[in-house]
Image (cartoon, rainbow, N blue to C red; front, side, top):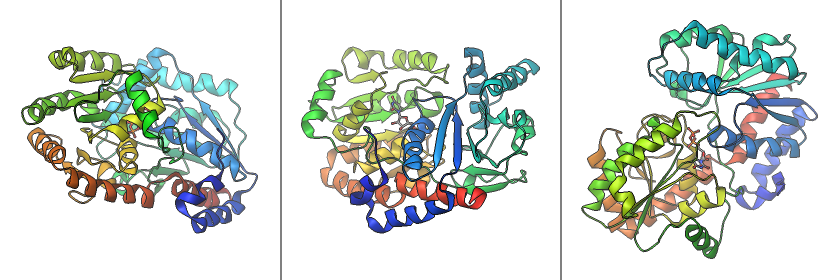
Length: 403
Ligand code: UDP
C-alpha cells in the first residue's frame, strides 16, 4: 500500500514531519535517481523500498534503477564486497574488465539526465565514467570500509575520486586517503513496512504455523543472508552451549539476494554443521523471502542474535530493537551505533562464543531482564533509526548539492 509522510505523524510527531516538509521545499521537483543492483534480500534494497516512495511523496521525482549483471559479474562483485571488508582477492585483469564492462553495457541503455545521481555500493560504482558530467554524483557505500584490501581499493579509487561526495554509515568508516567530501548518514528502517508494522498475535501465530515453526520452546533467532560474515556457523556452536542449560530452538532465516552467489554454499555448510539439531527440529533453517514472516519471527522470538563478524550497519538489529526485543550481538561495525552494552542489549566480541551463550541463557532465564532491555531497545530505534530521520538527512544532502 502506498504510504505518505503524513502516515508517520502518529509515530514521530508533527514537529518532525513539519521539518521534513520544510526541508523538501529546497528541492521540489528535482529529479534524483538511485542505482543499486538488487531489489530484495539485503539492507540496501530494504532501505530503498521505503525511502524512494517517500521522496516522491514529498515532491522529489526520485527513481530507482537496478544494474543488470550476469552471474559472473555478481561473482566478482561479491569477491569485491568481501575484499572491501578485509578478505584477500586475486584481482585479475579479467575481473576488472568484466566488472567495468557490465557498467558500460548498462550505461548504453540507461539514460541518466537527473539532477542528482546516487550510486549504492560498489556494483554500479564505475557507471560514473560513462556519462557526461552534468550533475552531482553521490557514492553511498553501505559497508564497513575501515579495513579494505589495498589493491582493490587502489583500483576502485579510479572511480571513487570522480564522485562529488561519499556517504558512509559511521564515522569510523571515514576514508583517510581519499580526498572526496564525506558525510555520515546512519541507515534506518520503516516502521510501517510489512516487515516492521504492528501485526496482531494471531497473524504472528499463523505465519509461524505456515512456516512450520513450533512455539513450544523459547526461540532464538538470527535473520541474515547466509554469508560467512554473518557467521551462522559460529551461532550453531553457541546454540550447542546454550542447549546445555535451556531447552530452546534456533531459527536461522536467510533468503539469498540476487547479487549474492556465494550464499548457497555457505547455507549448505551451515546445514551440515547443524545436522543433528535439524533432525530434532531444534535448528530450523528458512530460506523464503517473506516480510511478514520476518516480522512475526522477530516478534515471537525470546532473543534475537546478530553474530556477525563484520556489519556495515545491521538493519536486522534495528528491526529487532524496534520490536522491543533483547538483542545479543557482535561488537562490530554499525551494531555499536545501535546497542550500548547492558543498556539496550548486549554486545560481545565475535570470538567470544562462550560469552554469547552466557548472555543468551541469562536472558532466557530472566524475563524481567529481557523486558527492561527491550523497552530501552524500542526507544533507541524510535529516537534514532526511523526512516523519517533518514529522509531528513537525505533532504539535507540534496539541499546542499542541488537545492
Ligand atoms: N532480510 C530478509 N530476509 C532474510 C534475510 C534478511 O528480509 O531472509 C532483510 C532483513 O530483515 C534486513 C535486510 O534484509 O532488512 C538485511 O540488512 P542488514 O543491514 O542487516 O544486512 P545486509 O544484508 O545488508 O548485509
